[in-house]
Image (cartoon, rainbow, N blue to C red; front, top):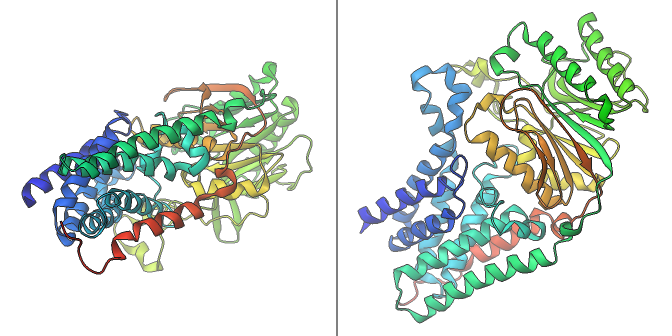
Length: 502
């Protein structure tokens, strides 16, 4: 029994991975979760946790395979080892879900066991996706954002889609364990019909279905510069010429806002040096000539000994906040990528092999995060639903996502990252303007529709119109109540002291 259950769990964990790009078979997610539920439910809790951990290792190792395109170059043929590091950190989420599923199978009412299992799985996703050490990757709700469940995100966020998807799977897997049990049959039918009804009702009442006609012209510039060239001594000159030329070409289309990707300018733009001053003044002049606010991704010195990943805001009608740069404002990235942009923990970790290759950025502490109705999210930050929701306190009408996905080549991550932009648009009810160094760039409407979209690859510009927000209830509710409700439901197996009779 243990061997068969383990084999089934590992196969289904790989099947769950196939719901994500590059395959994108989102319909496979509930079926894979059904198999996981069936296998975990057959095992005693401690064995279920171990098999759950192994399932998580398979799922996340494949999900993080894009790491070979980044830090993998340091290890050469040993690059796949890097996939196991994040998998080891994230796999306990599956172990927790498996443990609760096994307990629920033994302690809960037949009709409630799959509900508790779905809540535990989703709660684990919430916990691993939150905080400075959180990794909001491989979220089931993101994989399902292009499914008919999309409207649920306007009411319950990405975790609402995750819970709905997992509930479909847990009830199906629970029923497959005993197809002759009438209560299980009624439970699976009620769950599938209930999720379908909720999705249909959410779609019917979705404010974003009737958003106001867009009236503000915006643009995003995609330089299409490969990472090897960008980080070379020649890269800065090429980037300045490429981005300024493409931006000047936008003049006939008269955008009021232009977004450049993350760290286009690979030096501290506010450094007191003649070369950086000349670049800054060049961008400021383009902003005035276009009569458009330019958001330029760069590096910034924000402390005497700290460099930040930043966006400089050039507003032709605003006051110049700095004579050195001519910029009206600066936004410094607040949520850095651990073990990529900085090393969390004590200083001696820097002495470990390859640790000197990790960035030395410091997080920003911005007093202003919204400029003229637009709030920027730099790369990693756009994956965190709680960060995007917190920005709504400043009531922006437009979310800007500046990212450098050139690090990840043509792996699944650039596509999954772009799908997160769809999620943020639906959750917040805001328009999203996304600029990727090598794609994917585009404009996303509040209903998650991409009105403009580029492919991965070379230079491109995106020009289109954006409009007023069309928020749903989640824009007010936020993720905290969702997480609390999931925790309460996941506690159900612990409310009984002994196992139920079977």
